[in-house]
Structure formats: structure tokens, C-alpha cells
Length: 116
Image (cartoon, rainbow, N blue to C red; front, top):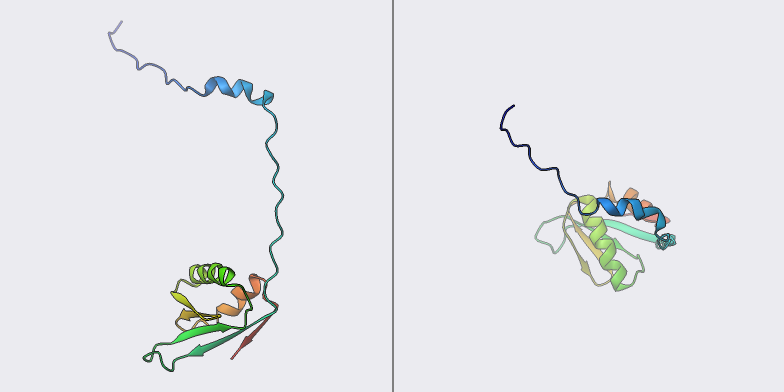
């Protein structure tokens, strides 16, 4: 016989709780809220004037509250992989996003997207 020491077995402090799992009361079931419908329409256009020759895509006439505009801007920036800012009631996204943006807006619930 050899004098090799075997490592002690792993001690899981939560192993005993597995047996008590059926005795626990059921968790709270949360209702899934339906996604709010998006605005009725949006106007998407490309703009270069007054921006030092840089192209930006402007999304207008969404009719959203300022808090919702911030959420939409964050989601659009993440989907498109670009920067953006809110100017008044419009969203301004960096670059020419006119081809990709209408599909994303329709997926977010905008019923009519007008490209200009």
C-alpha cells in the first residue's frame, strides 16, 4: 500500500437544501406586460448641412416622451452600432443609417416609416 493521501471530498454547503426543495412554497408568478405599441409614424432622413460635412440620420415625429426618447436612442445605438444624441424631439444617429433603420423601427412597433 502506498502512503498517497487522497484529497478530501468537496464539501457543498448547499447540498442539504436540495432535499428541502419540494417543501418550499411556489415563487411569485410575474405577469409579462405586453410591449407598448410604438408611435404611429417616424420620418427618417439623412442630413449633412451644418454638421461639418458629417452625415447623420435624423429620426423625427416619433411623438415620444423625453424618457422614452432616451430609451429608444439607447436601443437604436446598440442595434446599429453607432453614436447618437437627442436634439429637441428628434433622434440624431451618426452615419447614413437609412437602409437599416426602417426595419429596426418597425420591429419596435412603429407602424409607418417614411424615408426622406
